[in-house]
Image 1 (cartoon, rainbow, N blue to C red):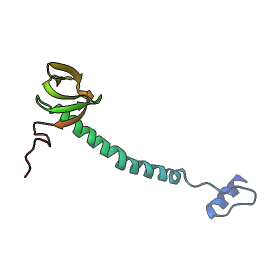
Image 2 (cartoon, helix red, strand yellow; image 1 turned 90 degrees about the vertical axis):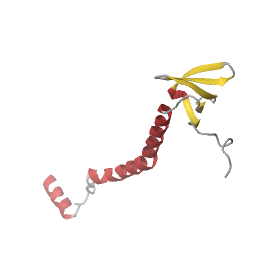
Image 3 (spheres, rainbow, N blue to C red; image 1 turned 60 degrees about the vertical axis):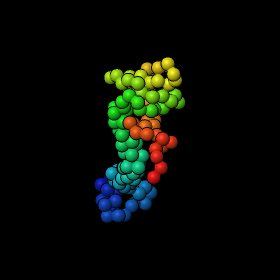
Image 4 (cartoon, helix red, strand yellow; image 1 turned 90 degrees about the horizontal axis):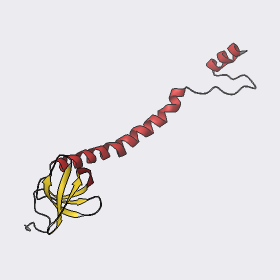
Length: 119
C-alpha cells in the first residue's frame, strides 16, 4: 500500500482517502530566507555602518570637540584616555565618562553652525 501511494504521488495522483503529499521542505524555507535577507539588507546592514562610523568618530575625538552624552549632558572634551574621556561641562567642572557614553558629536575641530560665517 505504501509503495502504491508513493508511486501515485510521483505520478501526480492521490489515492482516495489519503492526504495530498506535502511539498519539499526546502521550498517552504525559501520565503523565510527571502524575508531574512531583505530584513538584513534594509535594517541590520545600515545600522552596522552607522555604528561603525560613530565608533570611528569617537576614536578620533580630541580636546576641544563638543559632544552630548547619552544622558543629555553637553560638554567639551578636555582629555582623551584609552577608555575614558574628560569633559568640561561648566566653568571649573570636569567629569570623566566612558567612550560608550558619547551619544552625539556636535563638532570635531570645526566651528559649530552658529559660529560659521555665512557665504
